[in-house]
Image (cartoon, rainbow, N blue to C red; front, side):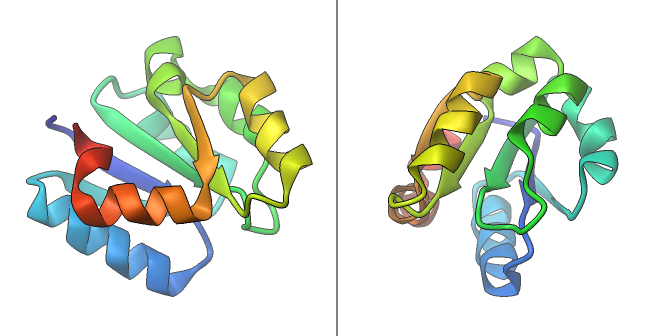
Length: 115
């Protein structure tokens, strides 16, 4: 995969970990903290967008309305497995992949996220 990993998260440790993993995979990296800040990237075909549903203001629907279909279909939403309503909201908004936080970390650290 080529392009840019864009992470919407307020978790600074996760931002650091994701940035490192993206660079190791040969991708660009950008973190964003609002739907407005994400808009440019959601309209760029080579974006892999990841939404941390643990962020207080994470709104899957607000992201979906700003995203190209191609980007949204590839987008990943993740959160604690016990936050079923948030995970379901991301599925309903059209995120291509909705997984638990643990699955996201595992895929990020193994490089599977970028395949």
